[in-house]
Image (tube, rainbow, N blue to C red):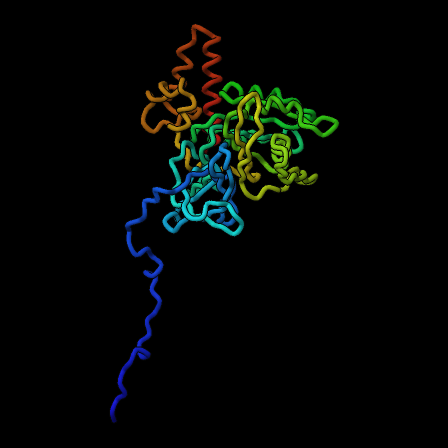
Amino acid sequence: MSRRPIDESDFRQRPSKRGSRPRTKTRPDHDDALTGLVTGVDRGRYTVLIDENLPDEHSIIAMKARELTRQRVVCGDHVDMVGDTTGDDGTLARIVRITERSTVLRRTADDTDPYERIIVANADQLVIVTALADPEPRTRMIDRCVVAAYDAGMDVLLCLTKSDLASPDALKALYEPIGVSVVTTHRSPTGEITPLPDVQKALSGRTSVFVGHSGVGKSTLVNALVPGARRTVGVVNDVTGRGRQTSTSAVALRLPEHEGARGWVIDTPGVRSFGLAHVQIENLLTAFDDLADVAAECPRGCTHLDGSPDCELDTWIAAATDDLVVQTARAARVDSFRRLLAARS
């Protein structure tokens, strides 16, 4: 019995994963790419501001190019783009590069999670928004945010809202000695945020990221600072004492000019935890430069915590026995550092 001739229909080729890989490792230089500021992130689409502060300033929608698949683009990033950058309806550009970041604010889900989540890039100030009451302030959460900011090389501003319900004195005494600036606000009988100029002055000319629990008044403050922001405002649950999360994604908003300078605020969703698994003790010490040289003489493996054997920080305090004022100041400084260090663990 003769066999029929074989033709191409007798062959079946299974799809290969190799087909999804670039055909060459040589990528374009994209010398003609335009640089813009990422002001919003929404499900794989990025709002990018091009030609900031120029007459033809405009926003476009972009997506990541294939070569950036494993890299995360966040609010505050400066990115290079190619493709249709006109910003017309229905157009889509491609992000091909993330420029070098000056700062990166990170957090982890908890203190054992090895995966770092980048919150925002290129901000120079972290604004921790905390209510003095309804809900009650959580100093451990504030400490953790301060640690994350110092690790990122950022300044810290503690904004205490609802000062008409409770005194800010205790929190001021706790955080001003460690270099944290403090401003307070409350709502007037007419519903206005007072005193707003104090907050505006602290934000003027800077890129600030707002972080805080849900219900502390973060979105209310943003709406007062940026007319037309229209950030959704939530309420505090009477039973749990916690706020309901209203902001679902980070967004960068430009501040109106104040005393000749402008700035940016990046509003982030409310957080319930702030893991610090990524923070190294050495990075935290850089925020306490007066203690860094002392701690450098500690034995290897010293945790610098209270009760650590042969910790030079204790020796430094004891060395000032002849001057009670100096010894008290040193002890307070070391206690502040150890409190933040304990918040990391």
